[in-house]
Amino acid sequence: MRLIHIMALAAFVGCSDRAAQRGVDPRIADESRPLVFLTYPTEPPCSYVDDAGKIVGTDVDLARRIAGKMGRKLVVEGVEFNDILPRLKAGTADFGIATIIITEARQRDVDFSTPYGMGGACFLYRKDGRKPRMSRLASLRVGVEADSVHDLYLCCHGGDPLRFVHLNDAIAALEKNEIEAVFFDSIQLKTMAENSGGRFLATPLETKDLYGVAVDKRRPDVLAAANAVIAEGGAK
Image (cartoon, rainbow, N blue to C red; front, side, top):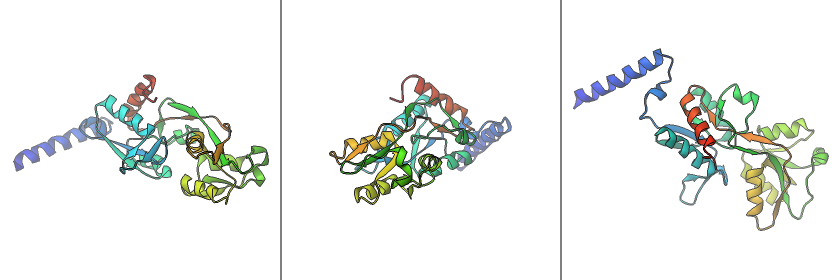
């Protein structure tokens, strides 16, 4: 048995070495290796932890369709949003989905699929409060996730937002009336408004953004599968 294990390991190493020599990522050559998928599980309905402690949501559903298209198993990892692209760039994960907005700057570090959705950012505010407007942004107490594209957008438009580590922290501050509004992706904020029993309202879109599957640049096979699934309508 020991000899068999040694021979199997030698064959695997040899295969990986040959793949590396051809400039092919060993993860492509090893079809038995599961895909490592990253998401940010704090944003229902896209990605969140259910009552059973399992990461679920529309982003996870899309990831499973991509893995199914490739005939691969899927490992789902919940991480901080700002860790997704660095992990992909470092090659410690294969792809990520978390309503990641496609930008030129991000395309320098990762590949993006064709857009699987279009949305944008809006304000969430209390029904008993003032409706937030971009025209009075300078005097608006608005919360954002720190270092996000929404943070940058408000700063570029004359705002001075209050920064929170997580969206849920900003929502909690809004609940306590410590801020007047939250600025974030409309998918999540509109869902929160719908589930708030009328306590929260969401404004129309302030921006228009395209969301893509972020893929390690060394994984053209994953990129091709993601594009195929999206073309088939698999993101719905």
